[in-house]
Length: 331
Image 1: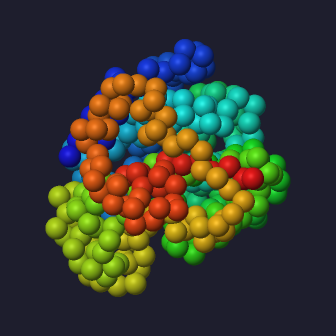
Image 2 (image 1 turned 45 degrees about the vertical axis):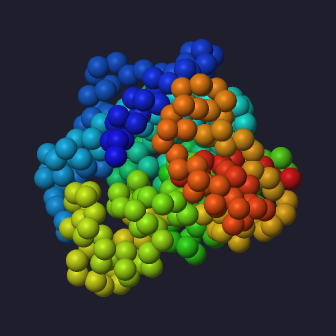
C-alpha cells in the first residue's frame, strides 16, 4: 500500500491546479513555519497516541509519526489544494461563500478554504487541535471564526440559516452513529434551498479494503467486537497494539478511529427526497486529467464497483467509491 506522503505526491503530479486558484495560495516565511512547527509540537503532538500504546515522543520518533507530522505541517494542505479545492470550486464556488466546517482539526483544510475567499466558520471538539488551527490561521493571516463544539451540538455553536455550504472534511467517520446522524440533520437545517453539504475524504464502509484505520481487508465489514480483537492483525503500528484489553471505553475509542461511513447515514439523516448528489471528486479528477483516468483504471476493482451498483441500482454511483467525496445540494 502506498504511504499517504507518496499518494499526495502522485496526486500533485497528475492534477494540475488552475492558475486562478493557485494565485490565491498563501505561503509561510521560514520564521512563521517554525512557529507552526512549535505549535504542533507543543499542543497537538504532546498527547499519547492510541491511548496506552505509546508516548507522543515515541510516536514522533517512528516513521509513521514523522509522516503524520509532515501531513499536519504542509502535506494535507498541499493535497487539499491540488484535489479537493479545484473540485469544490467547480461544484460549489468558494469565493464569497459562507462556509461552516465541521471538525477542522489542526486547520489545514480551513486554510485551504479561507485563502480561496470563503468566509469560514469552523468548529472542533479537541482543544489541542483547535489551538493549532487558531495559530495556523493567524500565521497565514486569515480571518476565520473558530469555536469549540461537537459536531452533534452545532446548533448551540452557530446561528441557523447563515451558511451556503457545510463541509465535513475527514471527520464523519470519527463520530459515533448518533452523533453523525444528529450533526447531519442539524447542519442540513442550516442550509437554505440551493445550499451544499459536502462529505470529503471519508472511508466508505462498503469497500473491500480499509486504507484509513487498520490497513486490513474487509475490516469495515466486521462487527465492532470482532474488529476490536482483529485489530492486532493490522500492519499499522501502533494501532495493532492499542486495543488488547476489551472494555467499553476502549471500544468507543476503536469506533472513533474510523469504522467507515456509507450512504445509509445520509438517507437516514436527510430523508430520501429533497437533495441530489453533484459531481463526485473522483469523477471530476478523471475528467480533468487523463493520468487520473489511467490511475483509476489500474487501481480500482471495477468488477466490485459494478456489483455494488447492481445490488443497489437506485443509489447514485458516487456512494460506491473507495472514499466518500460527495457534495449534496439541497433542493
